[in-house]
Length: 257
Image 1 (cartoon, one colour):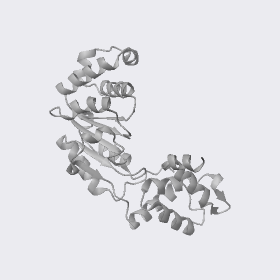
Image 2 (cartoon, one colour):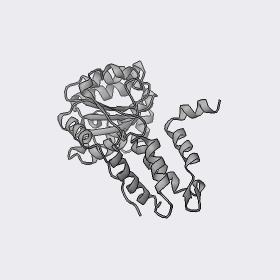
Image 3 (cartoon, rainbow, N blue to C red):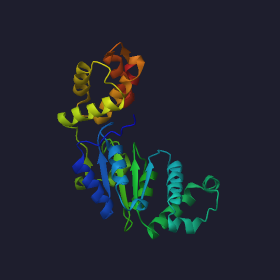
Image 4 (spheres, helix red, strand yellow):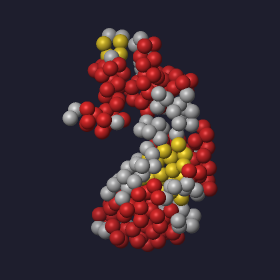
């Protein structure tokens, strides 16, 4: 059974993000790991009629890699200004492999200033000054918009200088208990957990997740693994430890020192 898990409790946030897309407005989305930032972005982009005017890339601390990913995404979207400037022919990968960071920055700046759109940058962590200088020019270019997603403003690194206005920050709050219960029910069905005794497991999941949808889904997903099962009972303690190691890897590193 391939059920799609619903996006619960984020109706207002989804509306705010779609408004930013329509108005070409820059916006910062914050929330802890598992809060639903990526799911929110996925859903909002999927519902946009002007999808080609939105280019999404995942953050890389390596500026050259990020520039290559952005150029590749723009060329795949047939961004007119960039395509006309570079004319990469049939082998885009070969053309990209031959470019320097300085050349790519110039091409991307001039192409996006000529034909602006919205860039969605997900998973930002510890941006450097060179990264800031690249996006600073795009941020202030007429018609351009930057949708950034990070755990918090500290995680943004130097890019926090662009998102100083709290009116342009969308913070994702934890799910209500009712929405958490609904999400658990969907996830239990998605991962075929009905065969187990779920009352105690449900209570522990909802109590420890504290409204974090990513943790609820991940605990249900792991519960379908025989490693965490004994008969009709789900072994919560080892499952919970592995979820915490995924969502807070640094805590796990300190734990084992």
